[in-house]
Length: 136
Image (cartoon, rainbow, N blue to C red; front, side, top):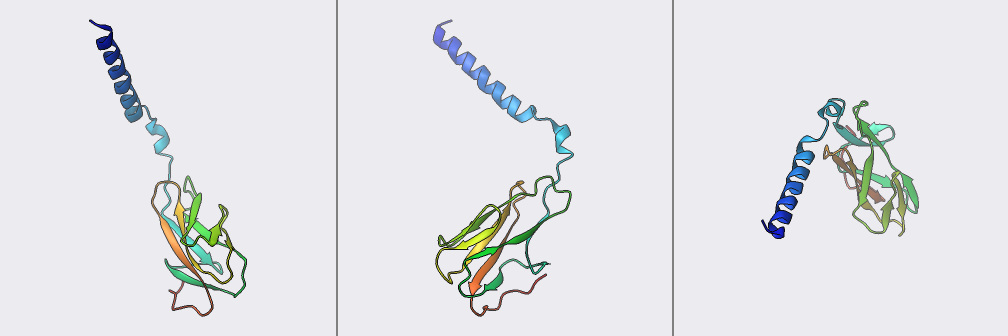
């Protein structure tokens, strides 16, 4: 056989080995102890609030600390990440909102990081709310 054929065969064996290891090389014993998140909520005054709840802040607020709940208590990974739809409202890893422009609201979304695909939104506004949903 020529060198080219041997090299192609070696590459094919390596690719097949990588695929097999990635599919079957995981330890399923560890999976039985993994608990996915089943719920995530923002908390306002200690109460879970519905998705798209409108939180009214006082004019001139510069920072606001978000509070949230991830459950159940035995969830394996309870970390979250945040996003803001307004580039003038930043949100840190710990949920601290910083308003770069006075009285500019945003929609803040919280996401679970355990691949359970859970998320919630809270609408941050200034002034009278426009009929936000009541807490759960």
